Length: 315
Ligand code: OXC
Image (cartoon, rainbow, N blue to C red):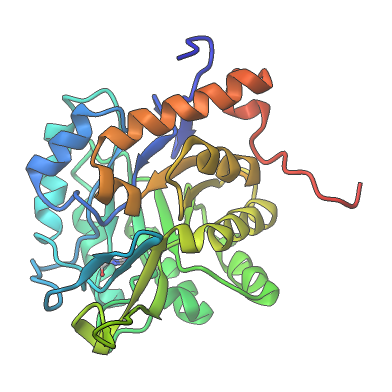
């Protein structure tokens, strides 16, 4: 592996030794899993999205790998925010930042959780999840621009750590612009693009059945299917947001090539979800090695050499 190539990056004012790390969701709900991420080549440790109270989540089966990607309707199973806040002290043992994902079930819950995180100084940043598609009866905040604004207006005054948001995928140019207008009014440290594409349906032809039990089979789609959508969202927000907001790419990354494309679109770091679930922590080292090889072949020594430099055909 070329040693002159560096994958180090900065998010929320802290250095990540590698720009490749885990997405919130798979294999990051329990302390033992978080330690395994800490011991791996992952550039950071990111927790499962935490709610105010512990949750069991939706009925099983609720996650299926389809080969080309995944469908899930986990429904935010997690240990409650204090569990993940307390882990911050243990994460100090690893030479990488610890980020906590927060997904309160209401605006009040988000304010409460974020206020209570104040004393946990080892949390390098909070990823506020505005986009879980899997809680029955709870719309995705990120698709409601006014509610997104109200949420950010309420949480920023009580937030002591750097704060970023995880967005749902958008599909229409005016929607990118409307969300960017909201986000540019707040001192966000980073924006993660994208959560799963909500409420897809995957069907088994033989049994003529859906694959997962919750919500009559509707669930969030991740993996290969969503890479073009994820790249488009990274590119749009990289272009539209203030330049000091780091964009974190998430969606369809299974190789160094995929990670390279996210960075070319403007990502400062890249999260791995479906492929991490499939391969475990080995994916971080493998993808980092593949990315370094591509960079070395192209003569790039650091992310800044190509980050955001996507070319279009109009000169
Ligand atoms: N996105 C989330 O934000 N959360 C999980 N699934 C998903 O696709 C979940 O827990 O349902």
